Image 1 (cartoon, one colour):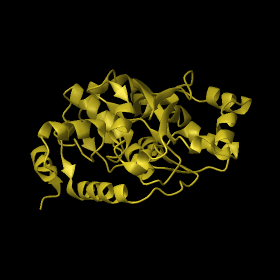
Image 2 (cartoon, rainbow, N blue to C red):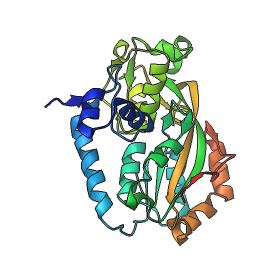
Image 3 (tube, rainbow, N blue to C red):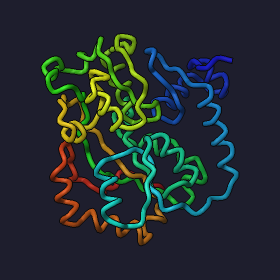
Image 4 (cartoon, rainbow, N blue to C red):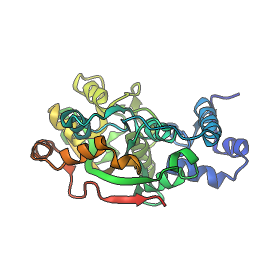
Length: 295
């Protein structure tokens, strides 16, 4: 049994058409990698994905712990801490958070997953998961947290070497794990511009954006695909590539919990506004705007 499945092999395993496999990959519903320039599906991750979907449907939903999961955001993490709202956090990656949210492991999860075919953020992926009973038992609402500048973070003395994403060829880049929204986006943008992943030198994947930026700072790599605010904090060079939308998917019942309401109130405070103004690369004009509300 091979470590990675091809599109055809996964279609045969799931007894679906190859077109459906492409749809699942585009929405981020199934774990996949494009590191070789074509879609490959890690067998272990696929098996875990299948097992999780089989077991969760039959189990009754459980009370959600007061935890925020999903993708990391510097302003979000700071706000949870400073608001003293009582919410804990486990911020690892977009797809990991969505899987955990399906299992009932938190009241909200952070997402920034781009769908190339639909030219949309997060909403297509959330809609693709609504078949799961535990996921949608009490309803979910997808609200915007912030729009963020993302691009190439490089040594400040090397900024002139980068005019566009095409200039990453032959460079050493720090990737993120395959479940990270930033890695999903990077691979999609590279595919759009016909950039062969084999034309780059890849380091080991960083489990956090902070780790990836530190690797660039320490000279272990030429660049990483990260947030403008982190480039600014570490005084590194930044070449903008895209403005992404970071959303929070919230359990609708939990929205009215005192902890969540206290967090929202803090986000309307002067302390929050001052901190947001100090950071680079954030657009908060649509904060908490509803992008999707399940029935």
